[in-house]
Image (cartoon, rainbow, N blue to C red; front, side, top):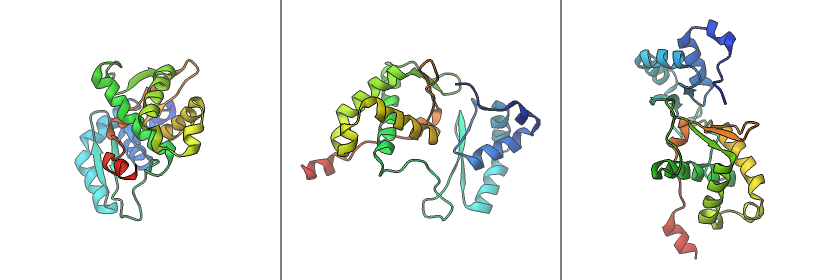
Amino acid sequence: LRPTLLADALATPALVRAWRAILLGPALFRFDDADAFAALVQHSESVAHELLENFGWLLDIQRDYACIVRASGMATGPVTALTPFGTNDQISLLLCNAIREQVTSGAWSPADSYGCLHVTTEDMSALLFTVRERYGDNWGTDARNRSSRSMLNDVYRKMRQAALLRGPDEHGNILILPTAARYSATYDKAEQEQTT
């Protein structure tokens, strides 16, 4: 669970690395390449202008990451690995909200200096159990009947694709990336009450 910057990439100028990371997406993390992130922040106005003029995209720079925001009605966007339709997508989004609650309540340690959380597979298993107890009735029969381990492996895969986490490694460590804080999801209670 180390930064993903390759040693060969250091020969490439920092701003070029920043452009590559945000264009290839889903985000440029300060954790991975602090120099590229600093170059992007320094040139944020010109990069934002180029993105807007050439593609109609917006640049979103946060304290620990930067990403491109694409309008949903465009042929070129949005590019996202998450949708509200798949059960694993929904669980991933619900876990993001539950992660935030764990940190806010003090149950989990706060983020490190790069905005990342260091947790274990046991932490995530317990969190999935809580989310499953709270929202599982909203999931399809297949999801409700699956084992937690199997479900969690698929959710890990989905969250890795969306750049929300890395891991678990061989020791069961997981790195929750700062992009997980972008998402907050729940099911509409009024709609649930109408269906019951």
